Length: 94
Image (cartoon, rainbow, N blue to C red):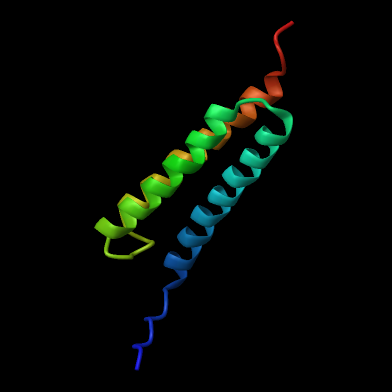
């Protein structure tokens, strides 16, 4: 019989939500990049870096989504999202 997984705290749920939202945003941007044929290297790299970063930080944090290592991964990718938004808002060169 399989053991029950422990319930997550509110903080763990919140950081897991932030991380998954950023990951889904990266996957959505990957779809956009493939459809438009622009920034493919960035889009592919961002998804791969998120996957390795989240898995690596969670394995070292023993599955704790509220661990500072996982939080730092989420914040790093939040900064990347901010830079991507700034790049998009700047528009193409004149």
